[in-house]
Image (cartoon, rainbow, N blue to C red; front, top):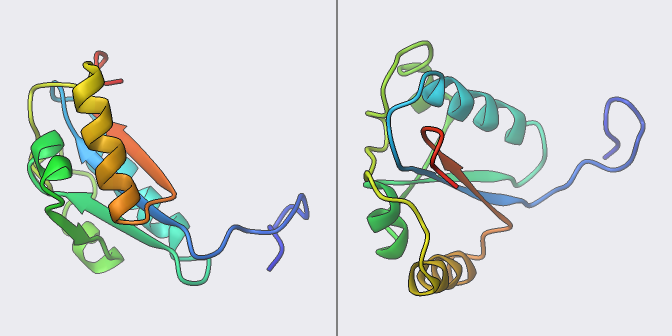
Length: 119
């Protein structure tokens, strides 16, 4: 499969996780909707949302995000679809837990979504 701009192949079988953390920020649901829409254009791609922020990531509490699910939240503020934690990944232990969860779930990417201090 080639990208629309012919700059190379579209990645297939990608599995990306999304975590809402930190402070509220505008556009979080729309970012999620756009990511899900983009990923569904490529075969076998999935987006997993971690319920409950970083704690959901550490506990592998994930739900597969579909266009139908995201559509109900498009254009709305807040972070209600997945919930959030007010923390952020900052210690070596937290980063190790996140990496372990990503590896166990065979994620090819992880997106952290939140306010200015979300890293």
